[in-house]
Image: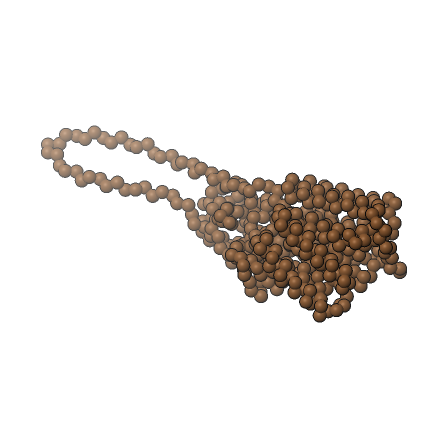
Length: 411
């Protein structure tokens, strides 16, 4: 099969204006997802995706069609992150789950456009230099942690906790996103955008980090993305930037929270992209407000009416009656009930059900106190995550104490 032949850029044309239009559309989708409502953002991204599809069949030549196909991955990343039932899983597995259809899409796009893996940068050219480039991720990860200060994705800085998450971040954020942005998108944009290709792709990459709600981070990601694109332009390999990208996220989410941190309990990120930080972050945003606990007032028990005391009868000589001592009536105390997690990672939610936002996580054998329960007892209320109560499914823990005496509470 013939390779896609890219023509020399001849100045602003149809492709340039189309690219700018889609940059504005994707930016609006991210702003809507972050600051208005995720479902509104998802509608905007779906409209962008459909527009890309129709534009590719409306007067687009071979090169422009290839660019539009690559551009489809930007809204697709967000749509997948919002449409898939990711709230049932810990944050780490969001990256793994969303990466599967995206990797398949890359294979299909490469085969359809007849672009070889070598042209996308999947080669080992100048390997020693690529390893040195990869070390830049240590600096980027440290700087981005200072900007964002995210919660860790592991309970402790120990090999048994960080090896698997590090592998997921390297492959599902570092490799995948470099193949999409510095690989497919940068390669196909050269015809229509020429010398502005790297800047344009870096802007798309940065816009997908709006979900962190940090202007400083968006600018930081733009600079890092431009550096990665510049490296790929000169080395024609993704290996170095993939290592750097993966290292950035590994330090950001697994190392620096414990080195610089204070190591706070890991909390599921509320992000808006497919991966952390210098990766495209796909965070499903919190949709429901933080729940507050409505304590049911204890129903007072009926106190028996005091029985009348008979009038004293006169006696020939009054005898001294000992003064009665007042005995305190024992008051009911709230039961002390403990919940011990038996799941590897258990989501803590803002209310009793999977439709509520994730506000934190518990780890295997972690103990917390219970302060309430749902009416059907399927969910129990714990105290506390970051000073606030939360809810967990009772089937994923062992309960010690008289939990049936806990008050029924509501979010």
